[in-house]
Length: 154
Image (tube, rainbow, N blue to C red; front, side, top):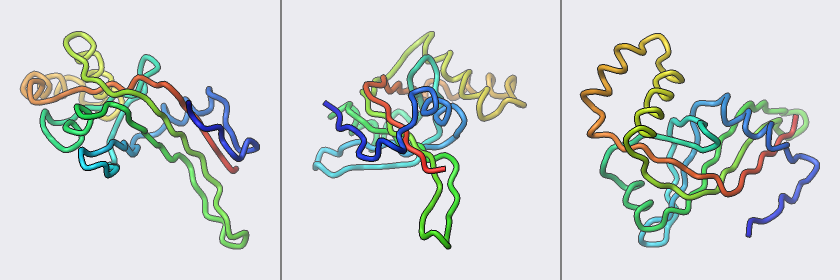
């Protein structure tokens, strides 16, 4: 169903790919628009319960796309270093393929708390108050991972 990586010598283990997902803060979510064009956008995210989660507004382009076709890809680029004298780059990256669905209630609340822990660890109590006010205007989306691959040149 998913193509094998061409450069097997650069393929990361599943554990190394997950570490990159856990250690980084932003990735590119790619969806397909109703007109068939891809739509990629940078988002903040968490890796939690073997899934990718992100929060967003209740309306918008990415939500419209997910409702039309919930198959998505998500890419994170970790450490990079340009090697000008070698005409190359050291890098690490992960691509996830999965299905995006909205989560609710207990799962939504748990994810929002995990997002606070990742991005605002010094402001948890203020964040909880913020969530009480903004929670209804926020969707939480889960990407259930169907395939993951990591690649690196180090």
